[in-house]
Amino acid sequence: MDCTQIRDAFVSGARPEAQAREHLASCPQCRELFERDAELGRNLAAQTTRPLPSSDDLFEQIEGKLARETGPRAWLRSRPSPLRFTLLLLPLLLVLLAGGLLGQRADLEHYPMQRVALLLCVYFLAIALAFGKQLSESPRGHALGDYVGLLAFALAVPALAAFAPATEVSRRIESSGAFGCFGYGALLTLPIALLLWALDRDDRPSLRTVCLSAAALGLSANLLLELHCGNGDWAHVLGGHASLGVAWLVAWAVTRRLSRARGRP
Image 1 (cartoon, helix red, strand yellow):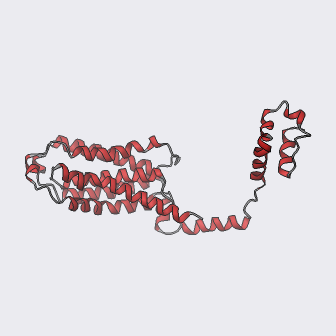
Image 2 (cartoon, rainbow, N blue to C red):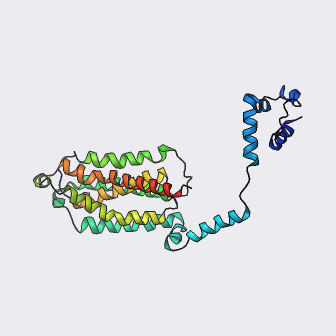
């Protein structure tokens, strides 16, 4: 007997060990099939003989997926990645301009412009990188280094900003209104979150989706509040600004959990 004949014998339900002794003496791969009462050989044969779904079942699955791919979200998801990235970034710029510049912080004229320009550039580049990775066509693997670094940056930098030197005007602002800033940042980034959901091609949010979405939205909210709020008190910044990244992380993680729970048979 040879390897093929041994495989066919297992698939047919036979145990050809007696007939295959000569072959097993020279073939370690086939010999493994007979170890522990031929456990490996029987398991592989069971996988091979598992019935395939019928053509009717396959057509039903395909038709169900096609039926779900209709409407505005399906059209948005079908656009090329560069266009989807542009459709996401332009509304973000409008939100930042409307929410930040129209409601400027009280100490903006006293704020060191080099510092604010550097912070805004770093935040915006990180946001664009997170959105770009999220909407890219790259494989959706589980390589943590691909997205955890961005998430760590998005959570750490706003928290560190709470301890940056404050201006004279910001020192005189009362340490209150953290909940108001939190609500302001969450409310103005909510449309971006909904648009990101509409543009993303993940039917069920993966760990990558959770991390990159939370990083981008948390930084977007902090970028908006950097232009809007002049309260430099560390407790206010931590509670009302930096906490938004954690809140978006929890929101996306809950969405992922609920989505996967609904998808279980």
